[in-house]
Length: 188
Image (tube, rainbow, N blue to C red):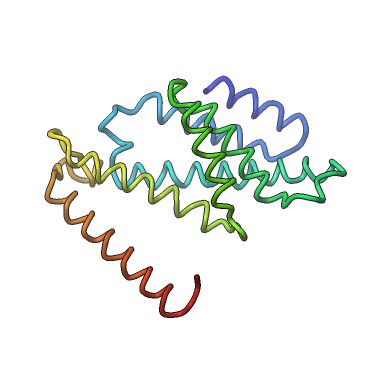
């Protein structure tokens, strides 16, 4: 992954594009390579940094892909922003996801695009699922016997099942509140 990030950096630099994208891919690869499984990546600081990096990679990558797609005449038929985000997401999956999970992810991702199309995509609709996925992963990891150090590097105190149950109740209440507002204001 680090080598791919360096190659992307060099290629983007030579083409006078946003080469910071290659640097961010290298930083993300270095963080994932050197962090322990239940260490930095399983804390609020870690998920904030990781989701911010992934979000910035998607923004910069989609702007490069969008400008490339605009050069193709047939691209006027598709929404280039959504298409570029899909391309960057699939590229990131090939870089960072475990190879055994690749086929399952691609099937689920592409079927989600086909059956649940997003009418109007915004950067909020990219960042929010990233944060939600990271936080739900932390919540589920809190149910393991080893727990998680949620506030690492500031505190080494571990949280366990009580935290997970409280967060699941909070998520459930927020989901109910959201659906009540959708039904009340007719946003559906």
